[in-house]
Image 1: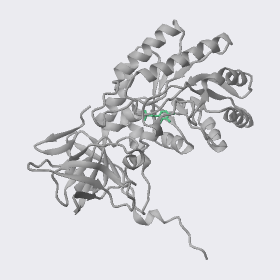
Image 2 (image 1 turned 135 degrees about the vertical axis):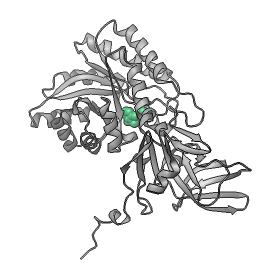
Image 3 (image 1 turned 90 degrees about the horizontal axis):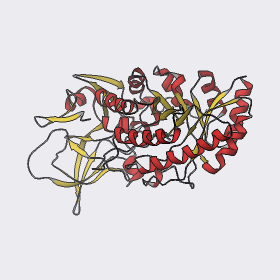
Image 4 (image 1 turned 30 degrees about the vertical axis):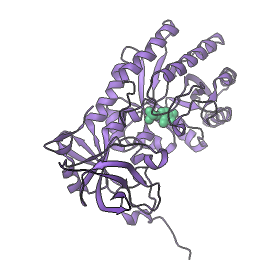
Length: 418
Ligand SMILES: *Cc1c(COP(=O)(O)O)cnc(C)c1O
C-alpha cells in the first residue's frame, strides 16, 4: 500500500500535503492513512477468506481510539495485553466477543473485568495463571474461556528482544507441558477450553518459522483430541514483518496460503477457526512521524541534524537499533550531506537515524517512515516532553485523532508535600 507519495516534490498522505498537516497541528506529529490501515487489515481478512477466521489486531502496535474504531467498523477482533487496552477497545466500539487477552502478568482485576465484558478468550501463559483464572471466574460464578499459549520452541530469526517463541523466553507454556495443563483445565469448574495459542515473535520476514510453529501446534491439537479435548480455534499470533529497509516479508497472501495449506492437510476437515493477531503488518507502513529540523551542527567530521522528535516519541531506534527511512517532506535538488538525525533528549541513544544522506536546512520538515506501529504506543514523557499529536488522513481530509499533550497536564496529578 502506497499511502505516502510525492507530488510535485511534496510528500503527501493520500490527498493531503504533509506540510499542511504541520501548519494545522505542528510537529512532532504522527500521521496515519485510513486507506492504508484499512487495505492492510483487509489484505489479511481476504487472504484467509477460504477458512473460518478472525483477524485480531494487536492493540499494542497502535492503540489510538480512532484507529481501533476504524478497524472495529471493518469487523476486526482485537488482541489486548492489559486491562487498559481492553478499555480502549471497548471505548472505541470494539466487540468484546472478538477480544483475546494475552500477556504473562494478568492481574485479578483485569481478569474480572474481561470476564464481565464477555471476551472471546484468555490466552493463558502459565499454570499459576490458569489456577488464578479458575478462582476469579468461580467467585463470579462464571466460566472463563481459555486457550493455552504454548511455546513451540522455534527460532523466529528476528531481533532477540522481539523473539518470543524460544524455550528460553518468558512467554507461554512449554509445548511439552501443554497436555498436562489442558487435562488440568478440563476438570476445572470455572474455565472452558476453547483453543490453543502461540506467538513466536515480531518483524518475522520468512514464512518458515510460522509454518514450523503451527505444525507443532497441530501435533498438540491431535494429541489433545486423543484425550477427548476438542478445540474451537487455533490462534497463530502475530509477527508478520514489514519492509523497513528492503526486507521482503511474506505478503498476507503468502502467509495465509502457507498456514491454510498446512491446516487443510492436517485437520482433515475438522472445523477449527483460525485466529491471527497482526499488529505491525496492519499499522506499520500506514503511519509516519513528522518532525522539523531545529538545528544543524557539525562536530569534527560529523554532521548532526537535531530534530524536534526524539526517543520519547519514537523509541524503536534507541530500543532495538531499529531502522526507519527518513524522507524530506519537500524534495530539493543539489548535493546532500550525511547526517546523524538526533532528538533533543539527553541520552546518546536518542537518535532516529544514522548516516542519512539528506539535503536539509534549519526549519525543514522530515518524515520518519513506517512509524504507524510501536511508535506512538511506545512513546513516553521522558524529559517532560509532551506527546505528539496524531492525525488520520482520509482522502483529502485530515482528522485530529489525538491532540498534542499540554505540558501542564503532564504534572497536573502530582502533589507536593504539605
Ligand atoms: C505483540 C504481539 C502481537 C503482534 O505482533 P506484530 O509483530 O505487531 O504482528 C500479537 N500477539 C501477541 C501475543 C503479541 O504479544
